[in-house]
View (tube, rainbow, N blue to C red):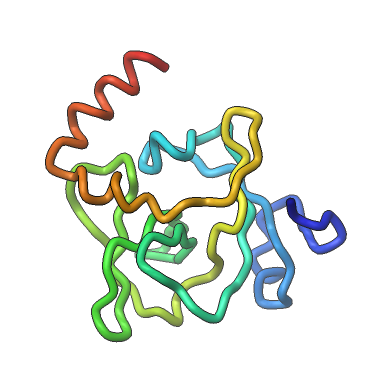
Length: 136
C-alpha cells in the first residue's frame, strides 16, 4: 500500500518530477480488462527503469496516455493498451512521466502485474475482450 503522505490525489504531473506519487482516474477503454476507465485509480511514480510489461504514463501527440510497455527497442518503448487489438505508440524512454505502482480495480488495491500471458494472447484478444464486455 502507498504511504498517504507521498501521494498527490490529482493530476499534478509536476509532482512526479518531485518524487511524489500521484493518483489518476484514467478515461477510456484502452486498458481493459485490467483498468476500467472513469472508475479505477492508478497510482503513478517516476521510476529510473522501465521494463516490458510496465504500465506507463506518457505524453503522445499532445495527449496523455496510460498504456503498457509492449516491447523495448534500444532507447524506444513500444506501447499498446491492454484493450487495444492493434496499433502501438513509439516513445523515447525519457518521455515516461510515471509508472503504475498500484491500481485500485473493483475496490481492491493491487500491484500491477506484467501481464505476460495477456500480451501473448494478442491474436485472440478480440474474443476475450468481447466476452469480458458482455460479462461486465
